[in-house]
Image 1 (tube, rainbow, N blue to C red):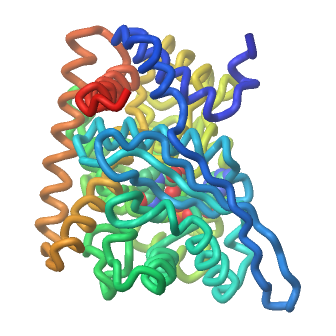
Image 2: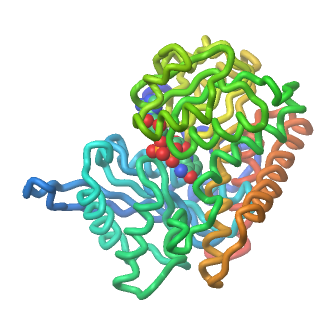
Length: 416
Ligand code: NAD
């Protein structure tokens, strides 16, 4: 038996899945089917660089399960994106879309590259070549990509354009697009807003008052920066934030609007004068009420989990907590609200964008935010009720709800 810390990310995510499948007493065949991705594609992404050389990147699209609807999941541009990681993230999307009741399956994509070292032209060419090479698997009723780590609305505009050159104008082929091209006002902030909605909904159950709650956030990209702004608006004291270059800490609370302006100009939070510098490792162990990992995966591990001082971990990133760390935190009575609930705001608003693209109309931003709130808060209460009635962790409760719905869809379809 492989030690948990030697397991791949996909194997680790499947440990959580196995616990849920075991409790649900899924039949062996269904259990095995839901453990593995339905389909995986690995492609070459050869691109001419600005200096005239050709560089060959690796691209992936993994479709984990589509029993509940078209596959849905982000595309990640990151130096460590590989098939195993993309598989893990695809499976989390299956459980996430089921947990929040969206008519989607789960998928994920990625290109192994470092977007911080590529020019806009190079990124455009990588995105187009990747899209053309996975084009036969995606589409408005097949598989709908969205932004993730290292990608954004511009990436989605290029994907839509490349797909549209073959299939005609297809705004519903990707979500998270610029508003000018059929994107929704409110999509960019949606994942961070969902994080804030979950914190607000859970505060009472967690014995917290959002006003003055001390929050530390790792990551200041799409998710982290919006989460910081929106929990700040709730009245929380954001005492630390970080990005890949390091973090900044002020026990009295950081001035988030000024920090966001500074980040926009400087490209990093680490030199902000309104606090002292800290490392990412220090941020994770800060004395605070709520720790929000909102960057890369597997940052809370068996090594640092004994020193996590927060009372609550709000998982805005995907798979930020390894299974070993998860059980250490549980033993220490640190409550972990899991990724498939906490960061579901992005896919919820992607669902609104997709349906509205199909019908060529658009809600106003207030409506987007309000409908997001209803769905994610209802999902939180569903999870919490199960936690209370069954005496299990929030992660297990969320996984159980998601896995049960997918298993039911497989059974109803009768395709096995
Ligand atoms: P992003 O690229 O916009 O931002 C990533 C942030 O993390 C940046 O501030 C970057 O500097 C920082 N970072 C990168 N490597 C780091 C490291 N090793 N240590 C510390 N910080 C590091 O990405 P994002 O869209 O904000 O995604 C962040 C996380 O949220 C990912 O785990 C992603 O899968 C998850 N997520 C994103 C969405 C979405 O809608 N964008 C939805 C659900 C989940």
